[in-house]
Image (tube, rainbow, N blue to C red; front, side):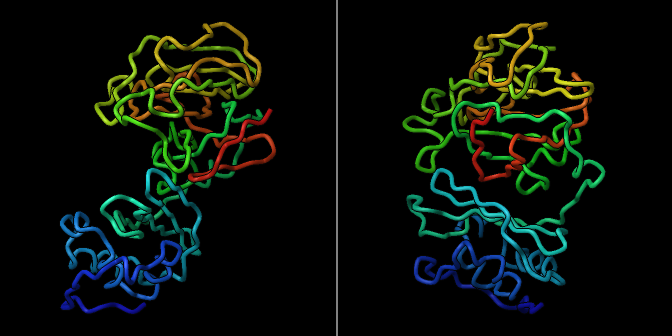
Length: 310
């Protein structure tokens, strides 16, 4: 791959005049168009990452990359987040672009990261015996989900590796009005449903909801949550419920699609959302996360929509 000399200095250009379209960033990286990429980054990015550092990281990363394929696109709150992986699935790129964001020309690069990708083939290709439905009654967007760390930050951790975080968006935003009020978020208070038939094993229901865009509760990371046993060594966990909204108790049996509580913002949560995962034991902290087999053979990842399906 072509490398730009480290003696070159970049003069930031008018990104509204000569933007690299988000769809084309990975190809421009492979071609070695590092100067244009860097010139399109925001001033805050440039202050954090110097040209020399950027060039060193990006050029070494792209040495033997044969090309990248886009696997995810998430539009949220006037940004576009795109993820690419190379042909060997060994390397990935994630970039965040301005999209009608006030004070930023469209396609300004707000964030850019390149990663070596670690895979876990021993578990990536298995599936649960239980067939699960999305734990929702409306359409919810997957904000984190999939089998690499760029589209699913949980993937790094064995006990959460195949977890999903779900939000509700309207017109590309997860809230309307005051971003510091839970009631402004479309997800807050919406029903959460049992993803399959089972028995309630654990319930926590008395943890206060956080103020969005403020502090989170790292001491009680799951917040209010429910654990359901569905089969031998198959347990689902739904977390971050609204305080006192959970309708079930330990020992109850539930049916697929039954409402068990409301989406909240409790625990280690920065805004109202649902955390959903399946694992091999009831103690989630010590469990091994399992890839979820969904109805209709769906395999949702970041940026896609989970539809209610029974």
